[in-house]
Amino acid sequence: MADTFRDREKGYEAKFKMDEERRFKAEVRRNKLVGLWAAERMGLAGKDKDAYAKEVIASDFEEAGPDDVVRKLLADFQQRKVNVTEAEIRTEMSRLYGAALEEIAKEYPSALG
Image (tube, rainbow, N blue to C red; front, side, top):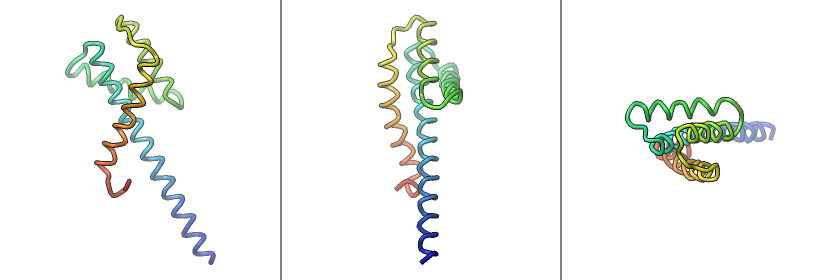
C-alpha cells in the first residue's frame, strides 16, 4: 500500500513539473510573440524586429508576472510615439498566450497530451 502512495506522489510530482515547464515555455513564447507584435507596431523589421522580441523576453525576468513586460512595452511605445494602451497590450498578451500554448502542444504533443 505504501508503494501505491509513493507511486501516486511521484506521478503528481512529475505532472506538476511538466505543467510548470509548459507554463514557462508558453510565457517565453508569448513574450516573443508579443515582442514581434510590438515591433511591427513600432515599424521595426528584419533583424531589428527579432532583436526587439529578444529584449521583451529578457524583460520578463525582472520580476514575477507579466507587469515588467507591460511596463517595457508601454515605455517603448511612448518613446516611439505609438498610441497603444495598457489594456491593448494585456489583451494581446492574453491572446498570444493561447497561441503560444497551441504552438507548444504541436511541438511536444506526447509530453503535453
